[in-house]
Image (cartoon, rainbow, N blue to C red; front, side, top):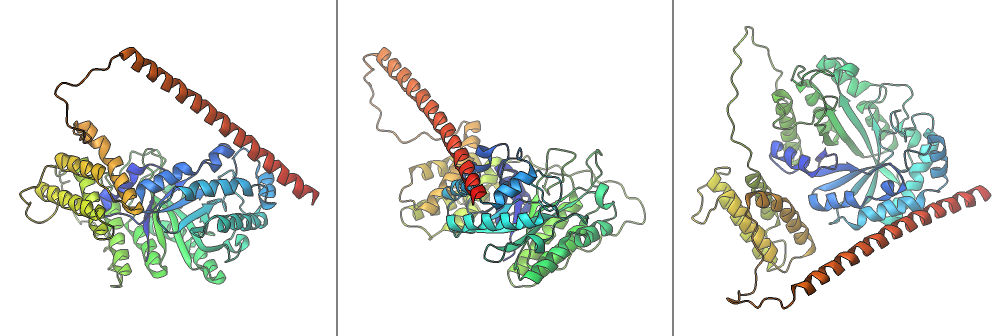
Amino acid sequence: MIKHGLWFANNRQRVFDYEEFLGRRVELVRGANGSVDWKDVTSTKWIADNGKALYPRELQVCLVLWPKTIAAGTAFSQAASGAYNAYWETMLKNLISGLPGDYLIYLSPLYEGNANWFPHSFNKTYEAQAKVVFQEFGKVMKRISSRFRMIINFAEWNSDRSASFVGVFPGKEYCNDFGINLYCKDEYQGSDPGGMLDDLLNSKMGLNRMLREAQQLGVTGLWIPEWGVRPYSKNETPRERIDLTKVVQGIGDKIIQHRIHWLWWDGRGSNEAYIGPIGKGGFPKLNAAIKALDARVRQANSGQGSAPALPPVTPSPTPTPTPQPTPTAPADPALDLLAVIHEAAFAARDKHPEPANATLRQVEHTAWAARAKAGSVAGAAPADAEAPIPALARIYAAVRQGSGWDAEASRLAAAWLERALPILTEAGAVPSDPEEPVDPDPEQPDNSEEVAALKRQVTTLQAELAARNAALDAANGRLAAIQAASQALQAALA
């Protein structure tokens, strides 16, 4: 199966926005760890929290392997000697401990290192050492979990200084996946779509070179882990000046021919950024091309072959009036979430034990009925159909009160509750938890001052616990530094 995913900048809302645009759930998402210091590098638990919340979407992770403050020469030498293995073990344990399911987790250590714009870049300068680093990381990775898979992840770069996949390949016992990130903007590739496509395919480190070197080494897992485009120039008011349909179609042909997994980059928020395809982004040709490619890939996955590419846009021979935009209904976050819940509950039907299965069937019906009443799905609405907010509140209460959940159903339910709570809170519709029957004449507490004192005591204890946890974190950091120094000393004495 060719997988379609999204680089989401560790922002879950971007995943939901992209799926709203696409009209379906993506197969996987891609995030990254930090690089400020060792604690930032190894604290991958928050990535796992994102992965857990976005389950059953699979997870791919860009990994920095040491703090950016360590000079490249020192870092590569120490990493190749095994001095950082203990840190990597902590990093991967933090990651795997929070992730549900049994799907494979793809790791991109030293991502885009073949170029020269990251502190961890190695290009040709440290190519031989990078190979040993990948081998050391592979040993740790295999020791922690069989779910991990390594991707050697380069960037498209038209330079003789680029490292090669062949030069850093650690061996198939550690890696059977290559990936190349593709980015497209006119200050690098020019504004002609044909030239842009040719550059992405045939630059000195382009998509075709990755395919050749993968074939040479017998590597079968192929990826475009990040793909971003920008249909206008730097510092220009965002508008679709450059028609990138040909670029999307051309890369899409390669995706289908070679079964390449692909993830779009969502670069909203900066005129410098590459534009991820979002339905409200104002780029109709780009958005149509992306949806067409997704449809082609889905047909290829179903064994029906690839659908024809979109025909080239033929300019009108005479100017035509610009049509006025058709007013659209404002977004309804409750209805959008009901669509996600409806799809997931339908997919989960009869796959879990009772009584959880009965709750899921109830949830599915409630979500479908509300969507039918709102006109967002075909079919007549049943008599018990509710508006989106009351339906979401009913689902929230049913899930909170449900029982008999297995692990997978619990993760699914937790994700629904997390997304529903802010919507219901804003609407003032959060259901109250079931309570014991209310005493018409409840007994008042004898001593409110005693209650206040207990609250103050709890606050004090919580503060003490936080301080002790902080001290423990600091001690663990010092211990890790001592271990690394000890390993380095042992390596020097060997």
